[in-house]
Image 1 (cartoon, rainbow, N blue to C red):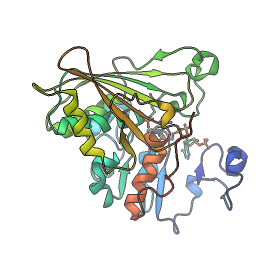
Image 2 (image 1 turned 90 degrees about the vertical axis):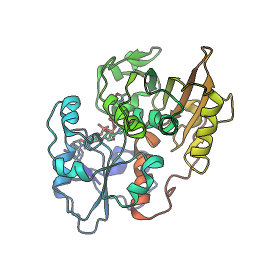
Image 3 (image 1 turned 180 degrees about the vertical axis):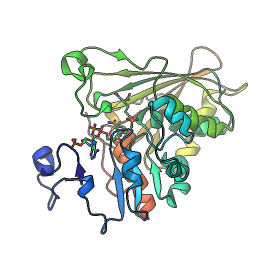
Image 4 (image 1 turned 120 degrees about the horizontal axis):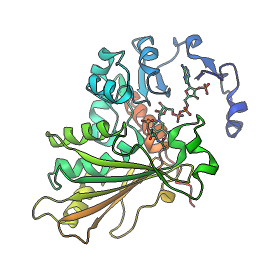
Length: 314
Ligand SMILES: NC(=O)C1=CN([C@@H]2O[C@H](COP(=O)(O)OP(=O)(O)OC[C@H]3O[C@@H](n4cnc5c(N)ncnc54)[C@H](OP(=O)(O)O)[C@@H]3O)[C@@H](O)[C@H]2O)C=CC1
Ligand SMILES: CC(=O)N[C@@H](CCC(=O)OP(=O)(O)O)C(=O)O
């Protein structure tokens, strides 16, 4: 386990909730880490710091990168949205996008997996099967997403202070959030055609959890029942993605602390339109849980190793 500012400290001193776990290592700087006995790495660094570090790792290591550094196939898009040139285009070529339920076969043989962002996970899981089956139009997709404050990491920002966050809601990244190209890349890949979306994220006064409410126009003659049946077929064998019973509204409380994505489809009052709601825990299916799910697949372990626990309700 590596760290930057906290190199040299014990994990228990920083995160006392781990005190019951035996033989936890002392955190070391990534420069001092010894990789000879290591099979795989989960890389959880801020965007932009990861490319150089992964480039320097031994070639045989399997890697799941949680940052955005390898998510965009087009490196010029990375430069446009992340404000710096891509420093490992060769590695980008081999990176597999780790939206597990959609790219499981590719992940099996991958060496480097780019773990998806939290918003793109909550949005693509319901939309990809509906787009692949041509049940919804590729235009006029409107996405309203809400995230708990932990989505911003632990770095102190004024907007994340308790006093700024509590009893309020704040839109941010309006008209331009860096997850838009990631979402459009995934949906366009499913459509074999360019898909564009309107996307606005919101910061909510909660520590974790994410909801995406998605407004779609259905293809001619298609009903919300057709969308429901398609999602049922797509996910009936999936352990971590669940379509709720008809009419039941997905809530962040129902997936809190778990690797589940719950979703449902509702007919809009306006004919020809439907409303899709999906929820995840941004820190689990939106980050560490999906990363572990991917690593399990890459290593040939049961996919739910370390993930088989119930959500923490309420
Ligand atoms: N929070 C979320 O909901 C999501 C996060 N992610 C991704 O997960 C990863 C981790 O996110 P999160 O935990 O929220 O981020 P944080 O900002 O809370 O943590 C990042 C950690 O990276 C360490 N670090 C920074 N620079 C270096 C370096 N040069 N060498 C070694 N360690 C370094 C820091 O360690 P130290 O404290 O010792 O300085 C810090 O603890 C990121 O890649 C993020 O993009 C993905 C999806 C959702
Ligand atoms: C609340 C909040 O600030 N959320 C983060 C997204 C977190 C995440 O999933 O994604 P990355 O892995 O791409 O960092 C944001 O909007 O930038």
